[in-house]
Image 1 (tube, rainbow, N blue to C red):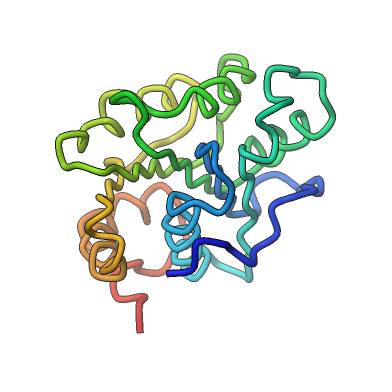
Image 2 (cartoon, rainbow, N blue to C red):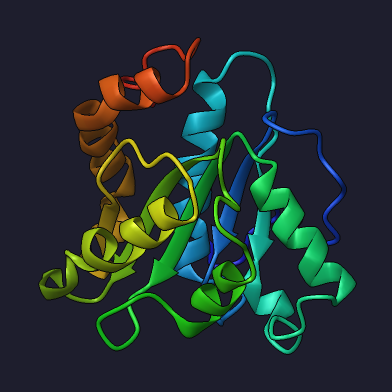
Length: 195
């Protein structure tokens, strides 16, 4: 695994609604394992959506000093990119048995139904299986509260599983293939995407 991604994270161009796969990374550290895992999920989803999609990453570490300023142009642009996504992979490491404050602050900038028409896939990277419910108990309800459709349980990846991420993704996508296809009409079967 390479901790630094080559996928561009900023600046974010304006996108037309319902066309993009966006990865929202709530880790306060740039180039994190959280980003790496989330981008693998986004790549798989982009492969099965109709048409060609180049996933885009919004890495909140790039906005950490400005995320409390909702009118700040880069923060506002990042929020528009996520809200206009067809699919948003929302990823966080576990901090104090929950998602990061950075991710919460960013998501708090949306009003009611701010993520309506977005299919959200919550992803949690944790050091211990004891925090496996963070995605279900904390992150998934937050995304639903903002109006996102969250058709599958959160993908939880422990640090020990990162080295065999392809296998973990294969199992998760296999389990949630039907729910994802129902939420994203026209999607080819997700199961078996890996070579």
